[in-house]
Image (cartoon, rainbow over all chains, first blue to last red; front, top):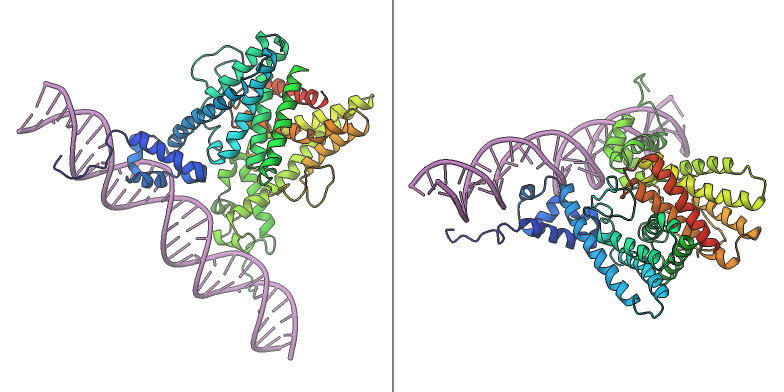
Length: 210
Length: 210
DNA sequence: TCAACTATGTTCACAGCGTATACATCAGAG
DNA sequence: CTCTGATGTATACGCTGTGAACATAGTTGA
């Protein structure tokens, strides 16, 4: 190797770029994830990225995939907290609530990352929106499905109610997150947001049970 | 003026730019609203825009304001259709449904414009999320408030139920629109989307009444 | 009527961006 | 030891948003 210092990583540029993308997008959102800016953060020439990603968009998508895992982790830890209830029905409902509030909480505390959350190229086009599962599904979505299926099993939801519940839940929770980060609620104090979030999540849960 | 043909509009560049921005964003979304591209469409030099807008962002916001009116118009025409019911309660509920489905319909048939809809710089920070109104409120939001207030007046909703209903409704409807345009539902056939939209809107309406 | 002023648009320039192409360097295989 | 493929660099091109200086058209006031 002739003693000259190598670029400090060899064969791991891909993950280094994703890591840098995570750090940058966390504070600056998508805008902060320019290809040149990310490669600069890693200390490499701009075009080096093209050895690992076809596009700048491909890099962003790769980072968005990581964000999916972070989102799922945040939701999961919140769900653990909610699992400490005696009555199984209460516990199942509390879990569903935790799934929703976890999603919202993540969006509000990490708005930069939340911007990326829909870019994870998952596309339900191949799979009918049903209970069955195949291929890669974002783990956060899977948590929602699990919570709803559990409510079906213990008889809190009927098959009919279960049918489109996932889209009602996801729509409400995602929509609220968007309104709270980019929309008209964007500069409301956190306490207001939290109280509205709780009401909104409770409302949709009542809706799917009605 | 020495007979030379003038740039064809004098004093109306601002509205011409907004018009061009509408046309471009309709098919290409925000990305198609680059300052150079818009000025090119009008046939004027790029920097001419700076006489009427401080930023490119300011131009985008101005276009987004126009989009708000288009959204409101679409929702309104749809609401007219739904107003033909005998029972006042049914009519009031049908109106609320129409408000929601109108919002979703607009988003799906004009996804380029829908991208701009949250950029209309309205910010509810000054005004508590209450029934009262002041200043400029996006007309589509006002239609939602009116529909809900009407439900309160005729006794379909209690004051308590009315309280946070606007955020539940807006969240659900906006979230569904986002999932259907940028999200996992983005390439579902229109019939699937329509049926899901109807279910989701019905669900949230049942939620706020429960 | 003529000069000064304001409003509006153009020209030129600059830094930044994504990315295509050609080149350099290194690791491992034959 | 050389060939080959993988990886990073250098250079360049066209695009972007925007600042500064300039030109011109219409208005205003003496």
